[in-house]
Image 1 (cartoon, rainbow, N blue to C red):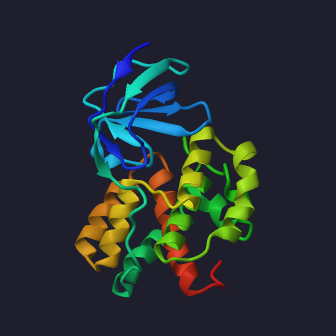
Image 2 (cartoon, rainbow, N blue to C red):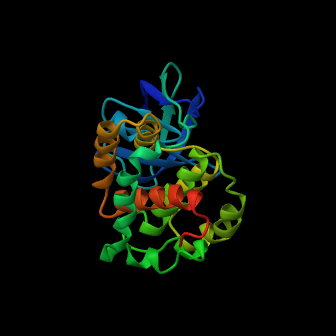
Length: 235
């Protein structure tokens, strides 16, 4: 078994030595599962920080099922997935309305057709993380950003997580419901809160091209969540 030594970590990955099993491996990230089924990730790019993740200089070849030792002791805390800014500045509403219009894209049409029953979005649509899941995470992020209660939304989708979508997606949604988010989303929320249109567009640009449809779906869900907070009848 190989041991890996990250140099920076998110604040929710506690110090210690971990024995984890590889679930998915890519050129810039590897996702691991612990004995309780929770996801941990090693990354080479700090822009990709997410809950329970750490940065490493390089990733050796790894395949699904491999057991790996990860010594997180001494890795500096560089990212807090629970820190998210307050209400978006309304003067930037035109920006998030553009993201909301992404639901008109053919690849996201399935989301638009199922908004009335959020549990139907779980596992729905294209992408390694299904577009419906990314949309839900964006929606939940907006709710948390504005301090809204997600108990009803959580109860509607929780049962579907274990039977309708991928392991990674279910972990992604559960993290969002727990108030833990990825760095790109947090930085976009901060720019909107500060009313900085240039930064908001730059941050959105880092999201929209993420994955085949994931970034577009996340932005659409985020914008939908903001607008729904202002108009509870929005569907």
